[in-house]
Length: 209
Length: 128
Image (cartoon, rainbow over all chains, first blue to last red; front, side):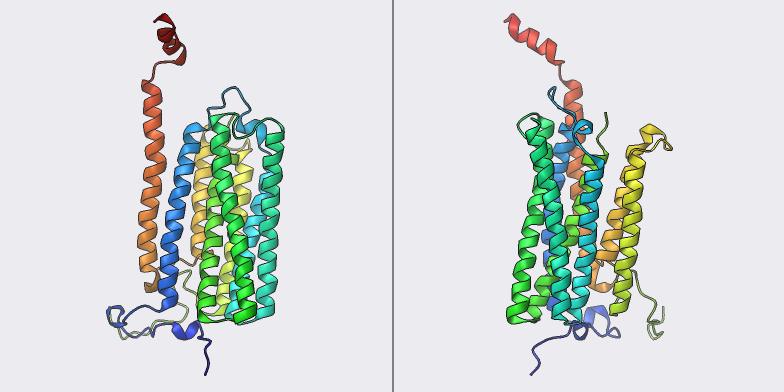
């Protein structure tokens, strides 16, 4: 018996009216549930963005954003995250073809780009703390480290999750539950990239003298 | 509208791609658009072509456009019946996010406006 349910075979026949189709497939329900979690996560970020927007001018005589941020550094970080979003999409396509080697390849590339992004962020934070612009220096820096640090923590969790998913693919294979989890991971990873668009626009490019 | 009319295979909302090749095309198109919008954001932030005070508005427009590109081409949010609930909850999420961010900014700006300047406040305390 074939336990590997194909994603395409779960699609609803299009001839039946929506009201007569019965319960949605589990893939759609699981995706919707995770989507609700992502929206609540984005609301957490919105509170941090609000705090940053209110406090970004309160430097308490310390360095302001325009003195601290390096645009080329941020551009490189953005490129890493955008490329990892694309490789995550490629991983999902490889998963739909049930190709384990290609899934490993694209997931490793996704994780490597995520680690590169994290490393850039950690060096940036370490450099700022070294220059005396740590989170305790001013309200502006407190809100900056909270907002950008929370995003970094999410990326860290995402990389750990991806590694666990690859172990599951290696041990139990492309079962429907593994496929649903990978689908949720890809939603999580793309949502983090959307939050990063807000971060680089508001925090880094929005820094005015 | 007559329900018997067959819907052409190509007549789909963007994002509701079914075949693997269509989805690959969607990811590549999305990546291309995202790269262009990101490059435009970074270029606009330090350009002298744009009237200075309008740059924040331009950055906001580019960021919202890029978020839309990510939603459609990477997260595959579409008008397909499967994602009706996702779109409704997304609309509610955007509403809450806008309330939190702009509400906080308006309230804090108003409090700031009504607060006595810090040096005068200090004077009151020292006189007592």
